[in-house]
Length: 373
Image (tube, rainbow, N blue to C red; front, side, top):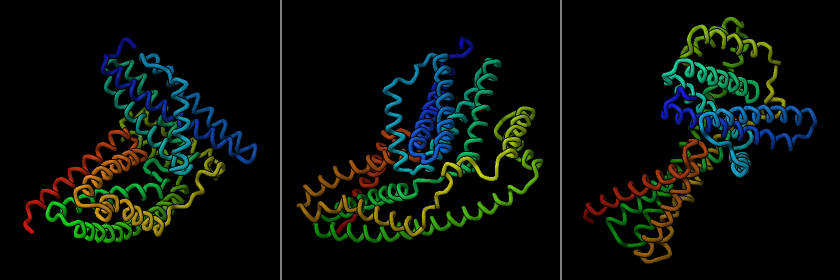
């Protein structure tokens, strides 16, 4: 690895660590499923998939050591296992594996970009080949295990609706209360405005989530019909589409042809059902629009009461202090929860949400002060 600059080494190391983490998470996930399997065949199949993921993570641990990094410590794998268990409960089984697979895909994409930026030609090509091999593995997992296309992401519908409903409810009603408090100082006026805003916002958010979820479901059903038609196409057309796909990803034509041929061959040799169907990862129904609307509306209404309720229980000054502290703390929690879906740092996500809510409240408070009542 002497052919790498410090900057190149660090970029590769960061990408390799992320890939290893997501492989470990998937291995732990399949391991958990294997323990719950009711028949020996499914248990064996899941155990094999889990072993493959752990083997791949070991490969990336070796690469990390070659780059000057450290192996995952025992405590680290323990916390990864706990994290996997929590996320599988929150997102659902399929939702978790889609999350982890797409996260790994993004990390491999980053690795390919960093490999392309390496000045030493031989080293650049070696890391690019590793990224290419990982792409093939991910595509196989997506299609054979999860039965999904590269751009799809499902799962965790209910949790996602709750988080985003709570996010909008807290920011908008906190800003509303701050604006009213800037103009008037009577608790009952602020309380009435806050409750009215919470009810109106909950209805609006619930209706919006219902319409959005219904539209998404219709698009998904249409996409399923398209996939049914797509399976009837000839192998030549499949190879041609794969060739264009990998060329668009930046591969040279010769490499793209080789990859496309391998992927098409795997697709042709597949049985009529995917591995995912056999182990039960593709049987989940889409989240109903009515539930999406109800959960979003309820979460908006409940969380939006946090900056409002103090004005029903206290005098204005302590109510304001309580509302601000409680709202900021909740904003951090909601922001951190969003990191489940964005795969960003939960601390950064929480602080970002705090900043947005605080800024919105400050702006509306200033507007309230500026308006004579």
